[in-house]
Length: 77
Image 1 (cartoon, one colour):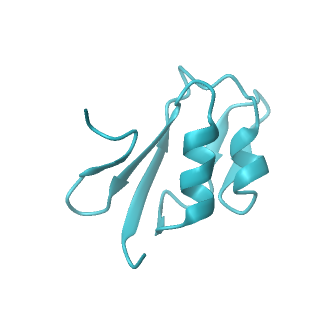
Image 2 (spheres, rainbow, N blue to C red):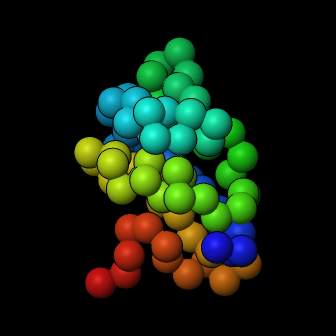
């Protein structure tokens, strides 16, 4: 892909389903409250991280292009 992404997890929305860990175990962790956190908020674009965001049942994971802030996921409508 070549792009760099900024990853955020909206902890007010995260329900701790751990789908992000299933799809991108090297990209996320759950804290003691079962809230997801990106291990590296600024990272290379990754199919696994995108799959994690797409599989989140509450769309708590937001991915933007680093620098421009353009939405990667969820896509702008």
